[in-house]
Amino acid sequence: MRLRALILKEWAELFRIKMVLYGCLFLPLFMAGMAGFLVWQGRNLPPEAQAPLFNAALLYFLILPVMIPVTLAVYSVVGEKEQGTLEPLLATPLSDLELFLGKSLVAVIPALLLTWAVFGLFLLAVSFLLPGGIPEGVLGLPWLLSLFGLSPLMALFAALVAMLISSRASDSRAAYQFAGLAVVPALVPILIYSVRLTAVDLRFVILEGGALLALNAALLYLGIRAFRREDILIRWK
Amino acid sequence: MIQVLGLTRRYGPRVAVEDLRFEVRPGEVLGLLGPNGAGKTTTVRLLAGLLAPSAGDALVAGHSVARAPEKVRPRVGVVPENPGFYKRLTVRRNLRFFAELYGVRDPRRVEEALARVGLEERAEEPVATLSKGLRQRLALARALVHDPPVLLLDEPTSGLDPEAAKEVRDLLAELSLAHRAILLCTHNLAEAERLCHRIAVLKTRLVAVGSPAELKQRLFGRRVVVTLANPRPGLDRALDLPFVRSAALDGNRLFVALEAPERHNPILVRRLVELGAEILFVAEEERTLEEVYLELVEGGDAA
Ligand SMILES: Nc1ncnc2c1ncn2[C@@H]1O[C@H](COP(=O)(O)OP(=O)(O)OP(=O)(O)O)[C@@H](O)[C@H]1O
Ligand SMILES: [Mg+2]
Image 1 (cartoon, chains in turn red, cyan):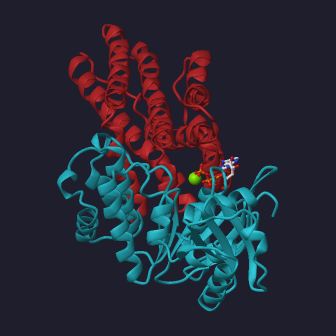
Image 2: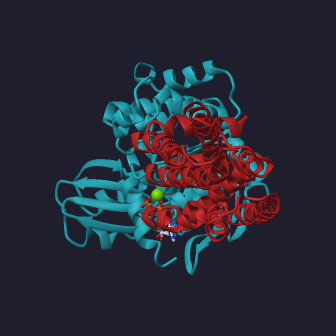
Image 3: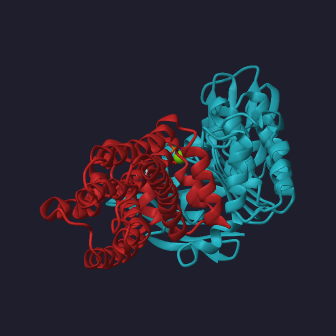
């Protein structure tokens, strides 16, 4: 299948770039380390007092699904521009939708896998190292929904924004700058947490999830309309 | 196989190509010649279904580039102006990727295409290590891997050494025998003359289309060169035969344009002798494609 061929090619290419590879490994490990450090500091507190620390720590894992896709998506578009591969790529029967979706998935899939992997690592480490293990109620439905429901939506949002911006931007530095916008959805839960110091609750997850779903649908629609091979060929110089 | 029907493309206010009309038949190589900025690359992109025409249309392998470019793309092989490969990936990985996009599953087809352009030995090297000429050959392999009935080649021998260029030319000659329609953009006039059945000269608009011989005749008529032992000034003006279109004396050579040299040469020679000329040689003038091209391109402004 063409989509599969595109995605496998992208990965073969992207992870051959040392910067990208190490960046993609370092960032998740760093975030997991930060999260671990945070809860480790409260190891002697009573469990009720540990819960807010855990909530803060878990937020680190919501940043990853937006940070990783931005780097990957921007790189994969910039790479095509720089190597002059767009013209032969667009000359193939690959459709605009396949190209847009393929490039987005290239960024989303590793971001999610890495996030979940280091989250697993974090849980494992914490339950072994903390004397009291994980306090009750922290890993409830809201958090699990955030990680497995919100994260994919956030990652897709980030990838779509990065794709749209880098396909329009005339140079790669500008693309990186603007693609920072993609991080906004991850900031919302952090903002809420810093104001109320409470756990991410179910109502919030559903609200943000709904909003992201609508945004992604809009972006996908926009992307497919704006992402015409004609423009890409003439603009992506 | 390729029918171009009034194809026009503008970039903003700039007209890149206007009202092109020509065709390329199966088994034919049509050379597209024209100065820099004439619109050759634009034409290739239009015919490849990469750019939408601003007006007009073209049928490529039976499908409209304006209305169904997605049906055109699988049926053409393109060698773009810049080859464009993923330089971190190997030669084989690059070709396999494009083959997959064209729906070619069988890995043997990839190997065949590599062998055809002589790149088997470099197959496991990253494209970054290939020279420009080798990349050009890889681009040709990519254009052939799905065995398309139509080939669009934008200067495929630019940057190749003479031997490699010859190999590419031989390959193209072979490919046209297999009933493919080939459009070949080139700046190499000798190449065009050797390889192309017909030639189209482009300068935003189509200036002329025809076989090299036709173009020569249409442009210059047929001229006979008479080399004289005793060139006498005024001899050209003294030639008063009805079928002589023009005559010009240049040194000891007299150039005479005739309608039909086969019929008129004997009469011409007799008359010259009557006028006191001593004739050393009589020959038909050889025009090069370069002269034809320059005449067309420089005169194209007026048209
Ligand atoms: N993306 C673009 N945007 C604006 N103008 C363009 C674009 N591409 C080509 N043109 C213009 O269209 C005209 C035709 O260009 P084209 O590249 O087709 O010429 P060409 O015959 O291939 O030239 P060369 O021999 O240099 O390759 C030129 O005037 C060029 O400046
Ligand atoms: Mg060109």
